[in-house]
Length: 429
Image (tube, rainbow, N blue to C red):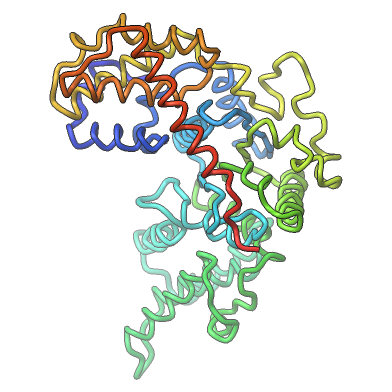
């Protein structure tokens, strides 16, 4: 958690952006450190895994479990921030109608588009551009050097030949002089085709053939291309690839055929990670994914791999399951988060909040939530406090306990509606 002095450096527009995202239930990625409070044990062991296992060539899959409102998405954002600090390539993908895990080629496309790392911007296209720029900085390579580069890329352990040929084609496109009669527009169009292929976009085999690429991205090769992406990231001095797949639980509401296809892809990712290097996958789930008859247990090939997850009574911070519901924020940590929210709200709307919404009121909000057995629901606490701060800034401050209980009820109703909408079947069959 940032100090109040550091929070005070936020500009009003930045603070307003944070508040507006919190209303929707998320935190802007660049501001995650402002809200990193509690769950130190989980973070300590994750940091240790990243630095001393994954960065040394290990691979791992972990499941992040929590009820709706427990802060799973935020915790995934914290992991993303840690991984980027450690020098990994990171991709955070929310599994939605446009990115269903039963269509892994669509997930691969999202992974490439959401890629962050030691390069400016977001997405594999920016990674590739920076790589080309780095080649130019040394000295524009000659044809002989381009041939050596191609050989080096093809011989990287685990590199797919099409991926290597695509990289070689980009280098040729950039550094080989235009031929007689060739226009720059033709080069630009060719470069766009190659970029589009790397992003998992739709291009034809006929368009790709001149570049030595003989396969379009599909379900059968997308996992191999994902591995090649990791190999290339390592070549570009990243420590590996961290993949965060959020909201896997929406699979439960889908028809059996789609669930089975989704669970088969989860199984394959688990199997692939056993043979991978410098690779970590996190899936976020709700407890029903492990308990429900439509969850993992409905697909024997996956259930045989994960049936032991969550069965242990004692928490294992090095285990496969990260259980947020069993390790909620403490009252003290929630109050600290509340003070942080209050300061950001002050900056956002340029007012003095502490006198109208003092620490005592923040503590009462927390106490009331605890009395109702809802202390673990971080999102509910945030929604309540923002609502109270909004009304206080407009001159109306809840001071009676009844008001606070009404805030809890109304905020919980909003969250229940969001949960229903989130779990509604929405993917195409």
